[in-house]
Image (tube, rainbow, N blue to C red; front, side, top):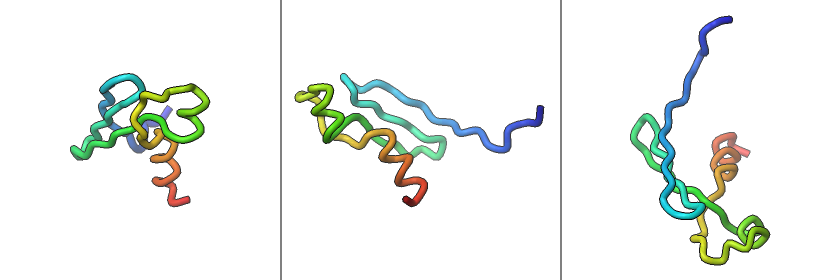
Length: 63
């Protein structure tokens, strides 16, 4: 098996409840959690509105 071409390095920490903070290797940080229909479905009324992790994935693909 060949060596990986690229290995992502990020640190994720739990802030509170569903709020997470990721620190990327370059030093940038991103906050993520829940919002909209997902928040309503799971009845997370006290959670702060933050982007879902999938929101970042979609944005990164340029879609």
